[in-house]
Length: 270
Image 1: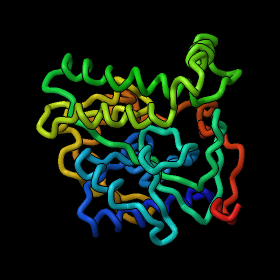
Image 2 (image 1 turned 120 degrees about the vertical axis):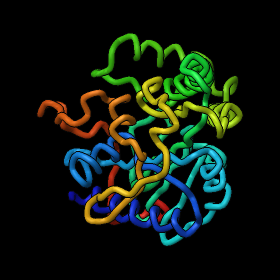
Image 3 (image 1 turned 90 degrees about the horizontal axis):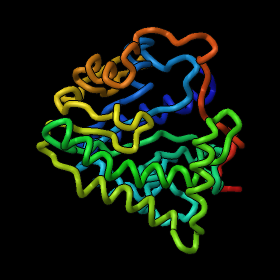
Image 4 (image 1 turned 180 degrees about the vertical axis):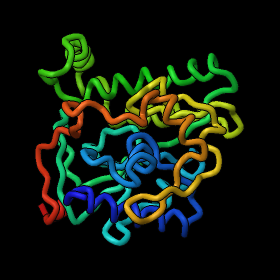
């Protein structure tokens, strides 16, 4: 593990133990789950952790985790900080400092992404309609908060410019981030056949059968065990199709665009 992976590993280990104590179910998802199965730990070039929590436990987590615990703090759209413009929660290591390149700089620490997992329908058509209600708002929020990049397609950069045409005094991005989560929460059906991480990077490919997540199942990860989907192959294949194959060498890099990273200095002191 490199230095940032070590920080993330201890965060994940702590979070696993916290969830066990508090009776909160969670699943490793996305690249974290690929790493657990394919590498029994981090994907070597990866530097993030993604977690999904069923909506009921997710709401409990953000409602009760309101203080710094053992140097970690959970922040969500409801935390009140105007520079936190994400539609989901993040667990931060308060002993570190990290700033990503976004329209509104958000100085925090090394983090784990914590997403709600929502039930969205009993057939694929119903699930896609429900997903669309959240996706439209979330994509608009992301367009308003991200930055224009040279390596991004022209039409995506154009959509960012158009989204920003609505001035901040007319549209509060903080309220928009809350609206994204509230819409997802209202859609949630604990008994539905299909579920999704509606804030996930792969958008409609995040829709999957609830049975694929199933009972949280332990998998090895860097010498410890963490929970992931019960039917991990079906879940991962639905998003990545060929997830067992390593990508070409030129694509083995982190996608985070960092302005600042200090693993020894707390953002609380700056």
